[in-house]
Image (cartoon, rainbow, N blue to C red; front, side):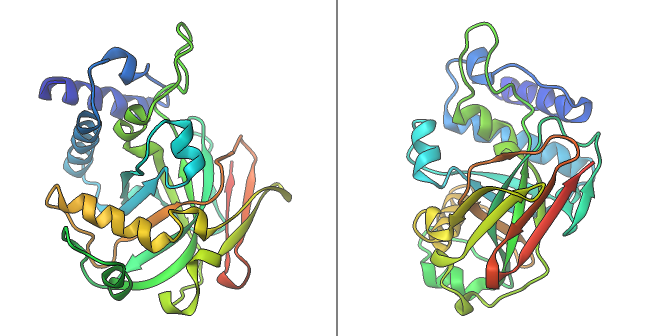
Length: 266
């Protein structure tokens, strides 16, 4: 793809977000596109949002489970950007006109006290840079159709990355834990919609350890001259399947001793 095509795709996605509509599959429109093109489109979106006054509050990591990687025929995670207008309060309400097809995932969020960057980092570097970990919900949305109505072709990882990794919102729990206080592999959640259990999972579903997921992100960012900054949030990846959130849904994630987090959809 050319830089002009990257910019055109980004404009279409930004317009779709504002209008709460969906565009067709970019992977179908640009069959020659590669992963670097998808991240270039995401970068165009990042630049446009910053120019409009938005600020970056962190990063998300997706496709960390073997099941999701297998479904999309890839063997690496993906990542996206968290902006300041994506942060929702615990037990808050998402306005009805905010998203197109919202879904949620349960994750362990890391909040950083010092910068984390470089190609030769270790898990210990991630641990030392972390201020605290907390329960979280990620709100997903898609500005690209999940399936092309004519061909039946499904959305690919290239579409998802271009669309800022389907990023839409983040909800943090009130509890803040030192990273050394829990074995994150065994931190899990029971996630309910309208008081009915929909999904359960453990942190080990995220590349065997959420710390490994954050390490992958920091090393990937280093390739582009980026780093995780102090105060930023990193969503380490979901250990459950996405839960659909039609209007009127109430989502509650019980992380046991690790805490609680909830969100409602108007």
